[in-house]
Length: 263
Length: 253
Image (cartoon, rainbow over all chains, first blue to last red):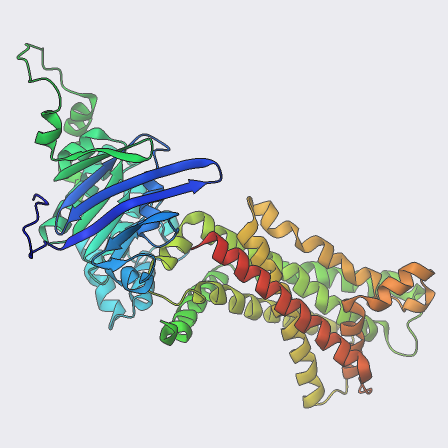
């Protein structure tokens, strides 16, 4: 999981960001971001609101041009080969980008068509089953719950099996059960070899999901490492006796029963 | 990627047409105001208006058709605005599709929706006694100029949709265009208007378009008016398209 390079045999960095800067008017949002994400890993980009996480994702997703620096996705440069980059990744934005007037199945078929894949109907049915949406597939998305929308949103991102997936705050605004469902989906992706770059404000989300964690602060990546490496930055742990109170989340999940999360 | 431009546009056109199919009220709403004007002017004011030899409904219909299109394009900017706001537009642009397809899907949908509304208004006019001896060629001429007019206004609507900050802003730009026909030959002949108003009425695009359609319906020679009308529509179309593409490229790298 490390990015150590041996001469002559560079591991394929799925995402490679070097010296990216971006300003909106006088406001410098990114002041020279460097980030390397190894293929098949989950990297969490942490940062407070306005730290520039979404800006960085939008640059990687070819929706925004950087002022300086280079960025590559799956070996292609975002500035000079945007078409090849777009074939290599999928973006799940901060707000579920689904078509409310269409049904869930129609949304999936639409994306499969736009990715120019054969047999869009079969792809749609497969993903509906995988994300427990088969029963809801024929209903308009406007009738879906927040968690169902997010699942559909992620299902739409998986069409065409892109090697890289960007998830911009995938669980913001979701209830605890829906959040666990999304986490499960992300883990399965990484097990299948997909590279995942996700942004989040929830520290426990990064802790639970990510192989590596990068902290974006005031326009730069100030820390980048595994959870163990990050913990080593602080003084060694002391043993303290603290009464273990269940968190409200644990109580909530125990009361409503986590077995229902697949429905 | 341009190899997919046609296929992607067709896919996205299919999507927006499905939207319209599921809310056909937008077609009807677009037609309601023009139909109300048709009724009001023919049955209330019509008796007091000297339009010449012909039936007043025959005189009035061309202007009403332009008003129909002008009110219909508000929905075009509104639909585009909603796509931009909801994030689905960015999803499209982050996929390997032809960049232009995302806009052309909306533009062609606008064309289809407006022509449906126009058809509805023509049907009502026929019931109210509108008659024309126009042949196939003349009808094609009318359809051609209406398509050109709709495309020009649609690209204006695209600018508004791309630039809007709120749903009201997206649709609001259409109101001045809806009222432009009132200061033209659409409702009354321009001869009776006071000097400066008459000058404006006779030199703004609506008058030449209205006169052209009216002459086509009345089986009269269209003359230079037709070329002026085509020039206005084409000029507006090219200008609006250029500005829309500029706004589009500035917003999305």
